Image 1 (cartoon, one colour):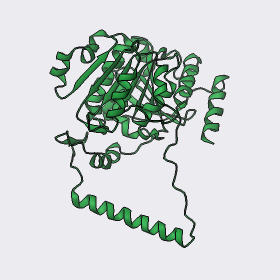
Image 2: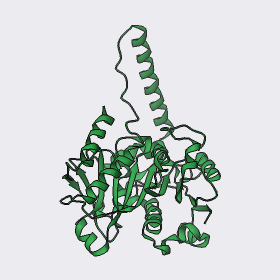
Image 3: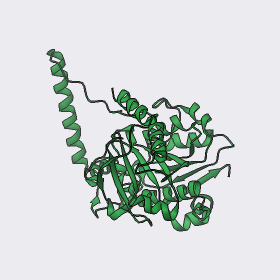
Image 4: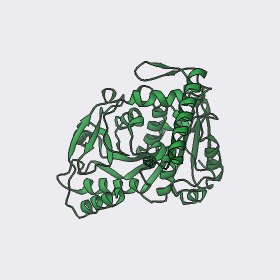
Length: 351
């Protein structure tokens, strides 16, 4: 049903019946550290997505030119982008429009991250400090034991209900999105960019588009990466390896035609091995960079303005979509990387 509704929405926009209508708006972390303070927007005519963009967008475009576009897919391929809000808001503040899968949401991002961080505390990271200054510690042995006991109790209750013939409601679906959503929202933005009267009219640089995804969202990126409109891809804590996820497999790597950036959390990242396989398998005509930190699968998305992962993403986008070669040092110069990010390691090929 969700796919049918989305298809209807995008079909309507394709014949010029709908203009963007912002109905919800918020500012995250004072709008980021970039030169163009950002905002998070919910649009009544694109309810399946959240837009991250500069405030006073038309004024920014008038003085600085049309804005490149990023389409973003979430970790777990989930229909909610709240956990990446700090990073996406930061990216937008540097002059980008980000369309992220998932409806507009005003939940507390720090509350979302707290449990994630404790459950996935990377052994390689000395301490975890969230954007609100809160220090996070890993679960203690006692807390882990209590969790296991609760899970065991719930499983036992489910078994008893099954044995007694009691009906049980099926769990809600964990995966609620699909790869082509990234192309559908790109189509919607393309229409809006050419529609007089739209908020996005002549504001978007549709010739400079990136696809970005975290974890399972990276599999969705690979699923649409063969589209000629996608000029670069960013894989955050992600790699397909030998898996089959969201319809993507190692065969999807053969469809790549653009520079690739993998930002991985080191050996403690569940995506680490798959990312190494991807790197080895990507064809010799495709430029690819992989940076590894010690942050594990959760990156630095919970830190102020998305932490160092956001800095790396902005530098890649500035280089690839805006032609700012001075931003390439972190990816091409080992000495620079060692100086600015001493805990990171980088490899590259085909440059």
